[in-house]
Amino acid sequence: MNQSTSASVYMDNHATTRVDPRVLEAMLPFFLDQYGNAGSIGYQLGEDAKAAVQIAREEIADAIGADSREIVFTSGATESNNLAIRGVAEQKRRRGDHFVSVLTEHKSVLEPLARLARHGSQVTLLDVEPFESPRAGWLDPQRVADALRKDTALVSVMLANNEIGVIQPLTEIAEICHRHGALLHCDATQAIGKLPVDVRQIGVDLVSFSAHKVYGPKGIGALYVRRSKPVVRLEPQIIGGGQQEGRRSGTLNTPGIVGFAKALKLCLAELPTEPERLANLRNRLWDGLCRQLGQQLRLCGPSLDSSRLPGNLNLALGDVDGEALLMTLKGLAISSGATCASTEPGPSHVLLALGMDDDLARSSLRFGLGRFNTEEDVDFAIGAIAEAAAELRKLGPG
Image 1: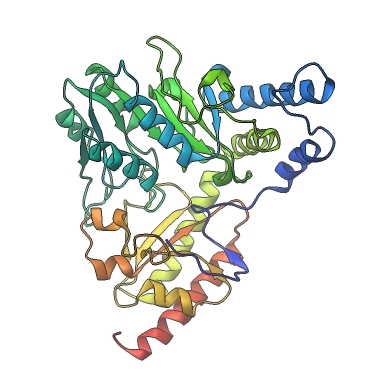
Image 2: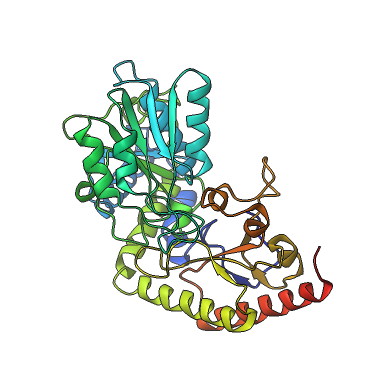
């Protein structure tokens, strides 16, 4: 999805978030004064870095109901997804060569699965509820049950979708997977820090997440790997140093890890109130755009209720191309339903998986509201989009 540029109002928080100043403050000492390598022992700088990493690891684990030994630090959720999927697939003692996922998953899940398929594995991608449904994008757990086989090694289902915000029934899916002996991986990048997430209660085996979606720094993520019986074992993808018990080699990003922990701590502190605030802003945005743009406006994804991320809004304009509108907009950063700046130009694969046609998908806009957005931002966005859409409608089709 493409982002507008030179914006004074930022509403693309599903793509990335601004680093919270409190997070930056926590990180700075580990760039300047406490700059030691957490793998270097025998002198104070190294020991201080090691201690800081351990404290942060424990805080991150606590944030998701895990044990600190179950956290593997990575460069971000894309690497975490690759480590989970390829790590299971390359284990000699895996259950089989069948993998199950969903058509609406992030490309960092779909592309590793496609690579496995090219090398002989069998991959099943499941449909979701269609565009016209109030539960659009939702995965019926029965679809998972019907897809499982005796040789299914892994199921991968995103907790909250990065484009349409739909929240999947992971607890039910986990019960089904474990009843059939399959592992369950979850890309929870958009959910952790925004929704209560307890990996033990959900029953998931592997969970990917990242700091830069929760007002932390880019370049640091994590993979939760369950250690309770039966232990989940992965074939490492980055080797050469043996760090993190050999599960992921490389010098630990101490400032990033410290910032990651601080960012999650701040999100947890705000969880009692922030989801409701964001939902109110999102609903104000939707209502205002409906008033300004008329009946052609279509909601993409599930209803605006608890089945959707509170800060997510994805809508289709119908008669206005989303990319053209972004080029007309001034002072607002959002995303469109086309992926012209990616390596695979075309409409969003998520929207197409809902059954939307190319033109309708290209007319869509995605908003990701976040911590730093206000009612004034929302009102500005309504006015800016209404003005840009009116200009394009005057030009007529094409």
